[in-house]
Image (cartoon, rainbow, N blue to C red; front, side, top):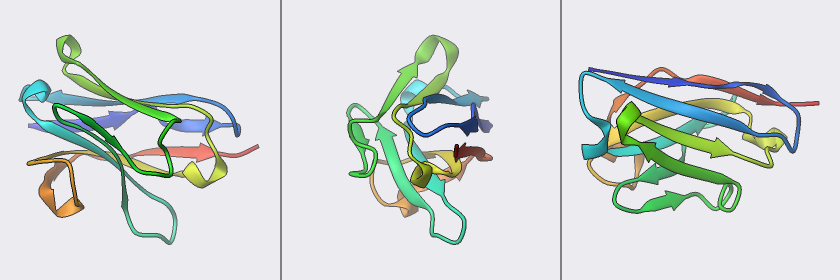
Length: 117
């Protein structure tokens, strides 16, 4: 069982990136998937989550979109209008329900997103 986040990189403010959370060893469509991020010196925070519904933190609402591609066993996080404060390591995780971090029990390795000119 493995989760792998990918798609991070360096992007200018206002730019876009699409992160992928790829699962192996299990079928993602049956699971709640959350995206989290941790900026340097700060605690990890929830960004978005997908179950039968989608949820977003206030800081990314209207700019980020979470989606599933069941055929590819992948969950995406489309990030538009990126800001320097979006700079962080982004993680995906499986959980029981969309909510606090303690509901998520399996975490993939993160991918670094840097927003800078």
